[in-house]
Image (cartoon, rainbow over all chains, first blue to last red; front, side, top):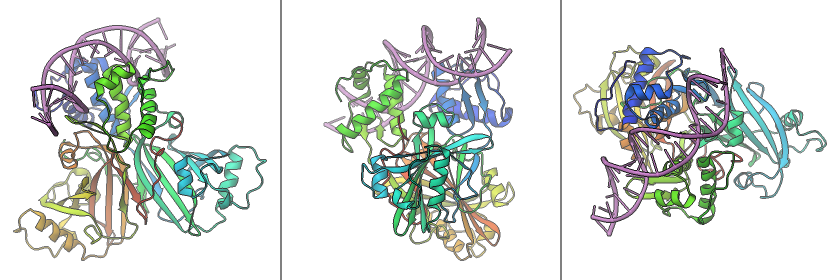
Amino acid sequence: MGTTQLESVPEPKYWHLRTVLSEALDSEFSVGEILPNERDLAARFGVARATLRQALEQLELEGRLQRRRGVGTTVAPPRVGVAVGSGQQVWPGADDEAWEAAGCDLAAPPAAVADALGTGRDEPVHTVRRSRVTHGQPVAAELLYVPPASVPGLPAIDAPAGPARARAVLRELQRGALERRENAVELGSAGTDDAKELDRLPGAPVLVVTTRYLAEGRTAALSVATYRADTCRLTFGDQGDVEIHHDGPETRAS
Amino acid sequence: MGTTQLESVPEPKYWHLRTVLSEALDSEFSVGEILPNERDLAARFGVARATLRQALEQLELEGRLQRRRGVGTTVAPPRVGVAVGSGQQVWPGADDEAWEAAGCDLAAPPAAVADALGTGRDEPVHTVRRSRVTHGQPVAAELLYVPPASVPGLPAIDAPAGPARARAVLRELQRGALERRENAVELGSAGTDDAKELDRLPGAPVLVVTTRYLAEGRTAALSVATYRADTCRLTFGDQGDVEIHHDGPETRAS
DNA sequence: TAGTGGTCTAGACCACTGA
DNA sequence: CAGTGGTCTAGACCACTAG
């Protein structure tokens, strides 16, 4: 990555810069390597720091870079494939899952969740918090909403609101017969607490996976899971790890 | 949305602003309504325009706003649910699909695609371009890579590289027996030409859906589809349109 | 404490839209 | 044409990390 000057082009500087840096990453850097700091890079390309940052933001969005305050900018490893809709119809908490239960409250859910569950807006539901870790990295935070009607055999609420109670809810949920599972994926941004759990800043891009668990014709549970968009590739269907990568996420000719 | 002053808080201004604006959108604006311009909004909140823009960017990422140069910023409609993995095992081009074939080339694919297909790096494959339109809006652009071996009955290459040839490839592909389909979703940014097709600017966030079509133990075809992340919610599984929304994509307490 | 990325400012000019 | 969002600059200060 020499002291390249930006030739004059009709496209935005930050976009051209993104392309130049992207190619430099492919050819001159290896995973984990640390880049020059933003002020140096900006000077080297003859642009303002803000412009350089705009290019870095793109590359971070594409999972090519990782930036940490106080540390620096490093070359990110390829995204990790995370199985989401295993195709099989399983309740959350089945053995093969990589989730760790963190806690459980009994509280009124957001209005949209209550509507999807078909419960009243102020009706309390069990709210299980779980987190998912892969390769030692936190990749997802989940809120699982379970109406009391879906776990009729659950012991009274004298248990503490910790992991033990969460597991009890999951265990009880699995006694029912699951009919179907519906997944949806959309882009979102991490709220303050999700960001903390995922070790990111607020507003970081996340893939929001909403899963409806259907049993006996009703929505028996609803899960809203937020995955780190920078590090994750969500896989649906049977297998997990196909490596379709670079040039993958930045699509076609740039 | 009064001439609100930002109270001093320990969180970034742009983040607080995002929250304030988000609430204003919920309570004081309706879909399609046009917001005051950025300079006015910035003045109204007593921040620099760049800071205001940072907040707007967040909201656009979350699908709440739509910004168009020369026009203004409008309140976006709820994201449209787009069925992606219909659960059934179907070849691309089945009747129920909403894709329109645009053209077809015979050329060497990107290296990563060639590897996934198991073809040689310089071996040409049929490359079908398709676009998907919903509610009159372009939502996705796709490149479908089909090795010649998967369409043995295809007439010689004398046909023009237009839609007709694309349809011929799809038709021929469907003669084989499809065994399985694997989907993966990740965040990406639109390249120059994808952006054009999706009516966005380069770098716009997209959801990249990679699908492997497996037949006779081989990867018979590979599809890379880029969906507009701002307007789409991808649904996997049987049904299409569950309305889990607001507060959906910006997750939990902000 | 030195160095990093994150936030913020107050300007300027450009590209595009629609009247 | 006037008005919009998009790009870009050259600064400043803050929050965080690690030696």
